[in-house]
Length: 336
Ligand code: AHG
Ligand code: MN
Ligand code: MN
Image (cartoon, rainbow, N blue to C red):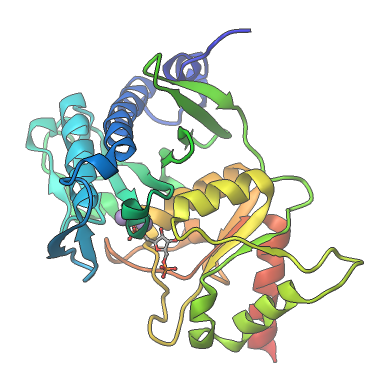
């Protein structure tokens, strides 16, 4: 028996890191610290008026910024800067990437969605943080440049999320399995609770999509959702619909129980809503490492060549079986 902290676990598995393990373990420590700060604030959000509500400004994508979006962004940048290995940060809440001028010798850049599920902050529902790390392309000792960030997801050396749910968890991958750590507030440590997470072998029965948008979706997506809802005892339909509206929480549930999350393109937003660099790439790496798939409908998310920090892509992520099933409806559309 015994408790294994995240740092102990990472040190015992140093050979699984594809980059400088000392640096990346240090970065995981910084992300843990940021996660603890956000955890504390989220847990008393209803008592702290400076945490709830909107700031009154919009981010570069035209979305209303919540106070906790801005606060989480600042907290993670502060802890990362102090840690020293990240030379630049791209964030959903920043117009452009920022250079951490005191960390020019850092070998890595970080992309993040500091607070995922903003619409759930004020109603006490699970929210999260998502992060992704690349090795820089520009010379060490200089400022980070856009090309350091615009790399395909296959180049990620570390990806993960923190889920502020019924408990707080940090889940990460360095390309060698997905491992989950539950925060013990008494110890102040993230402790190993979910080693080598995998989608259930049968692929599961959950589909997650904002059905309010279905009238805006392509016919193939409508047909897939109808298919999920039909009765068929032989193949176990209908499936079960679950949608929290916080991607991290929907992804985490579907990883554990088996399911598929879809945010397709719509008539109003042909590329969907979710951001390739802050949301889709890191979760795609985690999905694949957990034996699942992540596609934009047709192509592997991880192989997409990014052209913009804030680029959006349609997102189909989940177990192999359900991702293949959903995207087979799209393929039918193309060949029809
Ligand atoms: P964010 O709060 O970082 O802007 O992300 C919100 C995202 C994602 O978490 C969620 O799955 C999706 O938006 C929900 O969008 P809809 O409300 O359009 O369903
Ligand atoms: Mn988000
Ligand atoms: Mn966000």
